[in-house]
Amino acid sequence: MKMAVVGAGIVGLATGAGFADLGHTVHCVDIDTGKIAQLSRGIIPYHEPGLEALVMRNTSAGRLSFGHDPANLLQEAELVFLTVGTPSGDTGEMSLAALWAVIGRLEAWSASDTRRIIVIKSTVPVGTAERAEARLRSRLPDHCLVDVVSIPEFMREGSAVRDFFEPSRIVIGTSSEETAERLTQLHQRLPGPIMTTDRRSAELAKLAANACLAVKISFANEIAALAEQTGADYPSVAHSLGLDPRIGPHFLAAGLGFGGSCLPKDARALVRMADEAGAPQTLVEAAVRANAMLPLRMVRKLEAALSDPSRRKVALLGLAFKPGTDDMREAPSLRLIAELNRRHPGITLTAYDPEANHVARKMLPSSITICDSAEEALRGADAAIIVTEWREFRQIKTDDFKNWMNRPIIMDGRNALDAAALNAQGIVCIGVGRLPVI
Ligand code: UGA
Image (tube, rainbow, N blue to C red):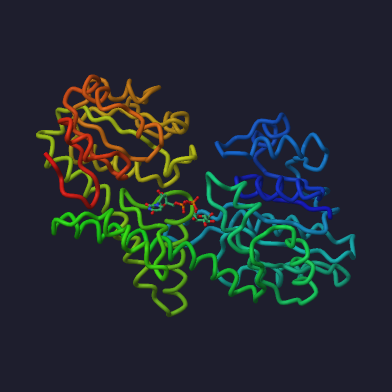
C-alpha cells in the first residue's frame, strides 16, 4: 500500500518506518525543513532506541522517504496517517492548529477519485475525526471519496519501536464497515488485539487511557505521602497493591510525578473538554493538581535535611521526563528547578542527564551548571536529588558519593537507589514514601 505520514515526531517516524518494514511504501512529511534535511541524511533528531536502525533499513530499501511538501506526494497515497502534535493551548485545551493546517492541504486532492483513508493518530478531542471528515467532504468534489478514521496511538517514548511491533491493542474507530475491514487487514501482521468501534469512542479511549495513568500515578504519590506521615514503607505497599491482579503492578511508582508531552497535556485537555460537555472529571482534575504539588514537597523535604539551602550547592541527577529519552517537555525537573530557585534564590545548582544535556542547555537558565558526568555534578555538592531514574545513577558507588560530595545527602526522588545500603554506610538517603533515616 502507498502511505503518507504527516508529522515526523517520534510517533510519526516509528509508525512510518514500522509500516515500511512491513513492506509498504511510506512517504513521511513534516513542515520542519531542518528535521526533514536531517532525516534525509540518516540523522534521527530524537533519542529513541531502535528508531535509527529501523529508519535506515527502510530508507536504504527504498520503502521510506522524506519530504516537506505534502501536496503532490499526498496525491498518491491511499492512506495518510496524521501524527502532528496537539499541544496545550492557553487554558488547557488542545491546540489543533497543526491538524487543521494539514486537513487544509488535503483539500488539494480534487483530481482523484480513489477512495482515501485518513487516519488521525494524534491525540485529539472527541469529535475531531467527524469534524475533519465533514470539512473535507464539504470542500472536495463529490467524486473524491474520503474516510477520516481514528486509530489512537498508545506507544511510549523510549519504547516506541517495540510498541509499534508489539502494541497493547489497536483501536480502529470508523463509521464505515469497509474501511474497518481494510484497516483490520492492514494491522493483522501486528500481534496486539484489534478492536473496531466508532470514532468518538476511539478518541475518548486514548484520552481516558492517559488520564487513567495520570490518576494512578497521583494516587501512588498521595499514598506515598501518607506512608511518610504514618511510618509505613510505600514500596512495600506498592508491591502488595501490584500483586492484586485487579490493580496490577504498573504505574504505581511514587516520585516526582508525571511529565512529558502527553500525560499532563492530555489530562488537562480531558478536564477542559469534560467541563464543556457537562461531565466534570473531578478525579483527573485532582490528579493534575496533586502532580503539580510534588516538586514543592521535595523541596520541603530537602529543607528538612539540609540547613540553609540558599547557601548550598545541590546536584540534580536526571533532567529528562523519564529515563530512555532526551525529552524535557513538562519534565518534573523543570518544576523542581523553578521551586528551588523560588524558595532559595542563592542556591547553586548543577545538573547532569545522560541524554538530555543538549536539550537542557537550551531550556534551563544559565545559572545552572550543566555537567558532562554525574561525578562533575556531584563534586562539592551538599546534597543530590535523583530526579530521573537512569540506570547509570544506580551504579554510582557509595564511596564515590562520599568522595565526590561535600556531605552526602541524597534525596532520591524516584526510589532508584538502595537507601538501606547507603544509610548503613553513613549516607543520608531520603526516598519517597519511606521513613527518612538521618
Ligand atoms: C504516555 C502513555 O504511557 C502512552 O501509552 C501514550 O501513547 C503516550 O503517553 C502518548 O500519549 O503519546 P509517555 O509520555 O512516553 O507515554 O510516558 P510514560 O511512560 O507514560 O510516563 C509518563 C510519566 O509518568 C513520566 O514522567 C514517568 O516518570 C511518570 N511515571 C510513570 C511515574 O511517575 N510513575 C510510574 O509508576 C510510571
